[in-house]
Amino acid sequence: MRIRYYFRLLRDIIRIRFAKVKEYPADFLTLFITVPAYLLVTLFFWHTIFSHVRVIAGWTLADVVLLQAFMQLGFVFWNIMYVFPEELSDMIISGELNTVLSKPANPILYMMLLYFDVVNGLWNIPEAAVYFIAAFWLGAQVSLTGLLAGTFLMLLGVTITSVIVFLIESLSFWFGRTNLLDLFYRAYFTVVDYPLAVFPLSVKFLLVMFLPVAFFTTGPALVSLRDYPLTGVVGLFGLSLLVLGVWFLAAWIAWKAGLKRYEAYGS
Amino acid sequence: MARKFLAMMRLEKEFFTAYALGAFFNILVFPVYLAVYYFLWSYVYASASSGMPMEFNALLFYYGTVFFVNRLVPDRGFAGSLARAILKGRVNSRLVRPIGLQRQLIYSQISHSIIGAVILLPTLVAAFWFFGRGLPVDVFSFVLLLIPAFIISFLVYSVLWEIAFWTEHIRGTTGAFQYIIRLFSGSLIPLSFFPGWFKSVSGFLPFEFMAGLPARALLGEIGFQHALVLFGIGMAWAGLLYLLTRFMLSRGLKRYSGYGV
Image 1 (cartoon, each protein chain N blue to C red):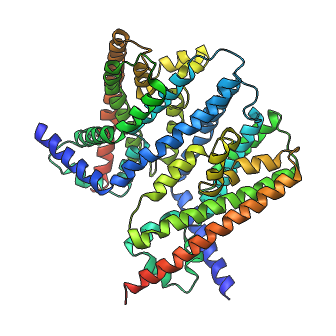
Image 2: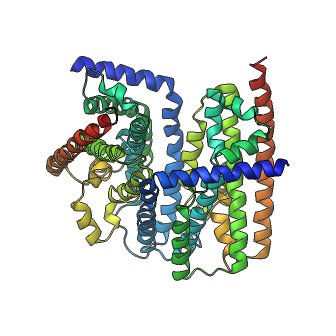
Image 3: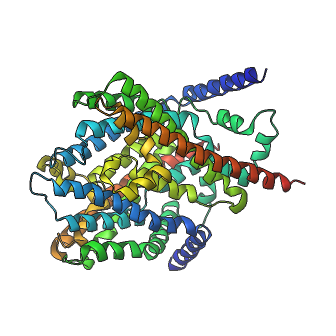
């Protein structure tokens, strides 16, 4: 019964998203002009760097392009499923969270469905596809199972990031608007498209635990490479699950405590 | 006019005080930004097979300066917020003020830049301290070229937000332009690293004025005489872009007010 309710909700939301595309087709199509622009810029950037060196910290141009491909694929999932944590702070401050809490559904699941935007992620698909093709063309040595494992690790990476965003936004229960998310995103997107191998160990630790770009781009690209050892793959998956568990617990505690505080205002 | 400018400046200061944390976060992101380029280029310089067009320290100082300039001049956020204002019909409240829309915007952005410069000056000083001390730093040419950098950025992003009079969103357009600007302005990598043909193409575009030229001027690569010439060219670009924005604004406002009939 409850599952049917969620499916109906999801179906209606997807219909609304596509209706919007039909209403403003030009806007939707303009999103696709970012594809060649982004490709041109990043490929040119890396090509310029690799015109001076053959390998950077063990990474070839093909590997870096593969990393970019996983990043674009990550944005597909992020833009479709994980927009809702970014909205949490506004919902708390504006009181819109009341509406969510009054629905006969799990509030987190309801928010997730409310902001589920299948159209929003579509424009990253051609970007990801072109990057994968470019990586193969440049000679990236990948296997099919590696690609699947990489995609799965990337999904875990996107989920970890989303859980951290949710935790940051939950702080609005106590501190109102904090701009902390802005800081997190600026730092995150400054480092996300570079291979972790260029950083020293201490920085790598930060990029695994606190700004976990390791599981979003570098990790997936590594595990999809044909010669990457199985122990490394298992290690990366184990580490990602550990990091996810830690952040999930912190986010869950913050959400529950925050809700208690939020509801107390109404009594 | 000066009174109106000061009033806008006070307003901007209030806004900054209310959301001061956001501005200070730029300072926190600065070491992350510089660290990425430091470690990446360390590898490139350590194993470069050919001569590099710039010394390593000069390159890092260049990136530090670009970070500073990029945060002083109007950016994608400026275009995005105005496009949203058009979409939500909030431009009305700006149109009824006793000061023209474009003047309001430029006053507000100048105030924003002045306050931003004060807050972000430590980033520039830090970049100089760590990487720029041995370089023939030219502050005069830098300040001179900051003027066209500001005006051209303001006008380029004005063209972009004015597109919102004809479309509902400008996310795709600004997104694409953002990438092009990053490449051609030298924000991503100094243009001296690119092949000759790319530099020739870039010479016919106004984007290098937005970040790369002021940064190169501070590094002492340009010289005051040449900076004066570049200033003139930059202002000519600004004139052309101004005419374009005026044309688009008048057409756009006609369309916008047409909805109220």
